[in-house]
Length: 276
Image (cartoon, rainbow, N blue to C red; front, side, top):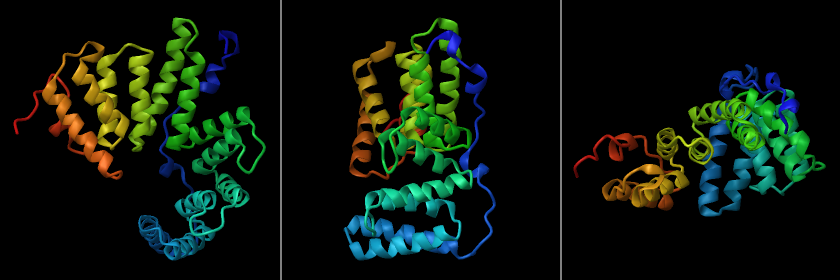
């Protein structure tokens, strides 16, 4: 990417949260009930490796999806990809992603971007994939915002300082928007941009902390190591480092673990660590 080739107007980003952009879908009021039952059975079937439960989960999810339930449609894409309760089918996954796109749902664009990027069920086209990720981002999809932000960050990293900062600002906005929707990986990406590209360690700490609060395991690990070794100009802090290590180990033992009280348990400096 060169300065002359950048369409800054096209790069302009306005944060949107996906659920706020979903259309009102008229249809069977029991679709939510079917979706919730299917989700519960899917969790149980996955935990127990029970094919009968997974098949029942698939049937309920498909029933809800056929009545326009957006999250059920999204889950159906993944079920067809993974073969959860159904024979794996890239073609059916693409079909349901296209149905989401027809409803102008960001998740559909994100799925299609991934399919185009990896050649899943469609002809590989990485350039087209970027367009789908960007459309997903504009429609509020957090994963799309993360993907589009990372693409922009990489593209402007070698430009001059003014253009680089302009591009970084767009990437930051995308990462923050995704983080605000609960995507811990976006907080990690934001933290890495601050330390790897912008030399802003204090801002990086806050981004790491926000991601750690959501249970992002790599952010917890990085905070542990940061205070253990005294990286980025921060002093070594054995107590604070040990606090993050403990949370990291808890997260390793429980993939669903989150830490909403992390600011009290392991506060960032200059706040003092609480007494045990």
